[in-house]
Image (cartoon, rainbow, N blue to C red; front, side, top):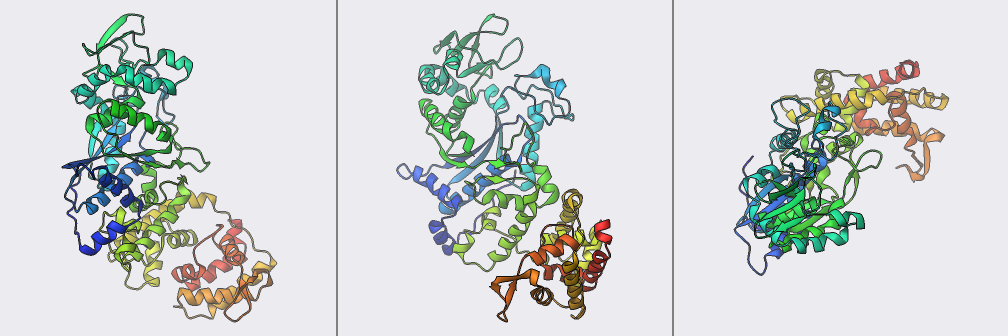
Length: 551
């Protein structure tokens, strides 16, 4: 766990923060308003929840990243005079209701269905004592890598250690009030057997969904029939019993005094239930932020148990963590697809925002995602080559290692090396991995038709007439001049600087389809300047000779 850095609270920053409409500031202002009558407390508690029924996915990370952004905005608005805590809570005492699709040996877990996740053996091997412990560790590993300041909490530990005992005893006393909230939300059949208490069978170890035969508020116990029909009485304290997930939300908020928690849209209809139960148990419901869900490439909700969509590790194989944080910051109330194709755009957008930050005033900076991603201290990074350009450079050069790429980069930008630009060096590694795994398998070169062959020949000649060190703008203009003379590529809805027709995007689409084997690419002039005019002409020659399409 990292420690929160001290804040540099300048008058300009504080003034801009008070007026900022960025969503983390809007949420932080709700927390301040929560205490406008009583005054701010000594400590404000932010919480995120995690269900470790499967390996952590990006949505889980998103909750922590976004909550951290709200926490930082709150610190700014309160001039860091109020202590804050971020508690990452794992519901690892839940029963394993189904076996995840993405575990190594599903059959080995079948005997442990409905047992608490911290009792289920770890199917991944290693030193972790259970499936729940393993998945908790996977979450903490990434949160630590990213540098979040947080405290991790385990439901199993909290229940068994007695941290929830006081509120659980209150739940026994308020049993009828809780049932009055829950029963109208259930179907007739479920109403007949529902109980907010889930006893853990002393005999089988399974979490039981059974009706209560008796609830004794004075003794703090519940009585039920175990799986073998034996009438059994258990205390609600000490981890012998847990709560159903909806009452558990409200109980946890009441027990811990949570001030802020965000959750996905799938919880939105239940939020009023969580709130009411929290109040019944003597607490005050926290401020909420409801975000839209992530979807896979087919538009389906990402599920930990299905393993669809991206995992945290998969994103970080192909892109820096900051690009992932940017994806979390942008439009949190809008559903977004989360699969491999979104990565390159997220990478380049992150560096574009980072570049813009240094030129902005405080009002603009507080609306810039990088201010929130880096908790107010974005680094100053010079990136002379975009990620999209690197990907196309790998594609054109068939580079298998970073040395090949650096040969092109150093010629394109003299003095730029891996030592002087370590961030760019990091991106070259990502670009090679991304190309090998996602671009290369789907590359489809096509042969040029007669019109395209003539246009490409003219393009090669135009490039040959340029100085060897011509910049991207000169190369782009030369390409445009070629395209304007080809009727197919004239766009009469646009005008050229000379007053003639503009150039259709179909011209550059053709270039990338024929020369790179892809549907789209970055600005041609920038690519050719990086790759080299001679190399670009050689690429055209190979395409016209049919070597690319044949390969």
